[in-house]
Length: 487
Image 1 (cartoon, rainbow, N blue to C red):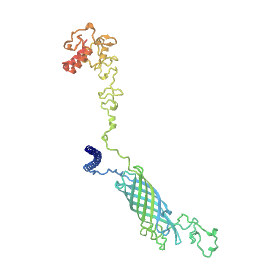
Image 2: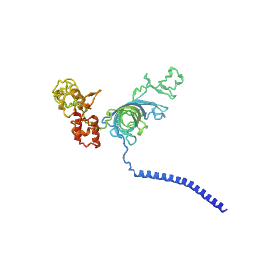
Image 3: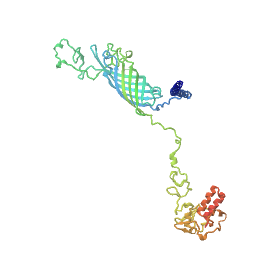
Image 4: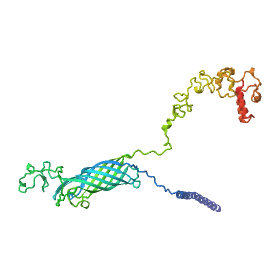
């Protein structure tokens, strides 16, 4: 019984331990992940705190400037705001007239510029009401000076933007000529009847009942567009003589779209406050301070005449005159350096089209330093152009590398070794073998035949570099010369 209790206790202990062992790693893993995240966050914050603050300003593109102004031509409509029709609730643009403007503008600084603007057009209005029936049309000519404020000044809008909004205001001087339309094309005056019709006869209370509508006697007409009568005195009861000029205050806004650095399209609207109340020929109370006003909205095309293509960045090659370099001829032979195949030709030496001295015998030595100017074609010559013959072969001395060996052998047949098969062999025939004349190089002659063969000279060079041949560099050179000189 005690043994059963003991086994049960041991089993329970093992099971509990296994559960703890299984849960502990999960808890440890969860805790370790939290610690890793916290450590990573702390590291990022420390790195951010340690990084130097970026105090540099954001790079803004410069505005395109020029000492020359821009010129623009525009067209739009002019809408009157004054005393005539002030009691009629209609939209201002219902009676607009065409206007045209010519503008010279200079953007002096990034956010500020100046403009001179000329305006020509007409303003008009018609009033038809039970109270009164008036109409007018004035021709307007104006010159003004404006101050421009540009919003694409790298403060509100980036200068690189193609859209350039702007504000402007200024002062101008206006001349105008008001006229009114009192008669039709036949010269008959207009009469406004209270039944809403316009006729060419005044209302007669005694005969109106006898006139049948639609008959010729009815005399209904419509207002034309002639404006034939000048307004020299005001249309109000004062009949004051009109001064047909005055100052104006233009204020407005616009939006310019940059087609390129040279060309822009501009849309703008200008409100003109006039210092007169007789633009419509009538003194009243409408407008700013009782004066008349008008609005000019336009679309214009601008040409920035002084702006060209941007200049490239300075280069170290800007100061170099490449045209002069192309025409240089250092040796003075009449062939420019860029085309001269033989630079440094002595002065006065005749040259060919490539700038090289003539070599009539084609021996590789120019005529001006050729001691034998008529050498046989293909002959071996020395540095002075003289043919190397049998007698002069020995004068080559130990400088056997100076002339290609195959050329030497062709020019001096007696120096050729015995022909074996289709090749020349440097192995001496057995009858001529011996140790006579080999002298100090006997140890290199491994087969003892008294002749240093190509294989033996190769072995000697390998042994020299391997440290197995006790020769100085000078003696090794002497061995090589001996190899080529042996007969």
